[in-house]
Length: 249
Image 1 (cartoon, one colour):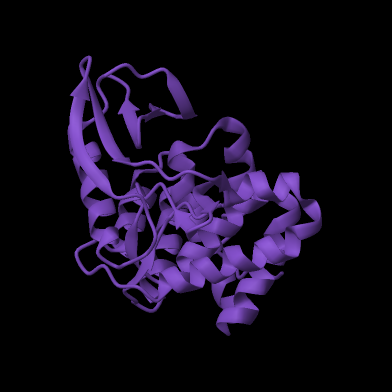
Image 2 (cartoon, rainbow, N blue to C red):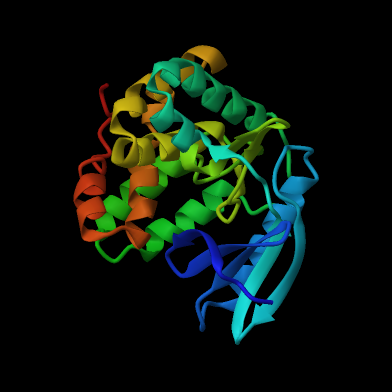
């Protein structure tokens, strides 16, 4: 297998196009358990009926673990937003509608969002014990739901083609409270799509009939767990959201 057409480069991995497949190749030494878990998670999401790339197999290429899946042609929502800024409102509405549809799905074998957040918050070395305790108490008080959550729902992870809209990159998929998923998207939008973040969260809350203040209660929690993999610049941004006093927007 000769891989020379790069689709995307991410931390610890590179995604290639090979014939009618997309091959995600992980760097040497990347934990096998995480790769197998990612493939299993995506396979479980496939069973919901959402439009997503279907897993074909897990393999090993030159000593590196890989996941081969269906290649989805088209443009990302992020590309379309850049190419057609006059369609921004229409495309943002599509983005929100897709997330709301996703949250109607169930994948009962996925890990629980709350459990994942607890593990991550406890692992953040930059947080003192008091802050961790307050964040974990807030997390524990949140209603327990079992909705499908993406964990990295961004315009760059939506591919549009003639067959519709496909959601890609399910490595962070869990089941849990949709507002935790929305809070994660909002913070990442503030970083990577700053002009869209506030219109996004307002539109989501309006269309889903969710109180903005309810989503805001999740912001310190999801900011804390993102500290684990954040760059120094991102850490400066995330630390501003860690105040466990209710955020006022």
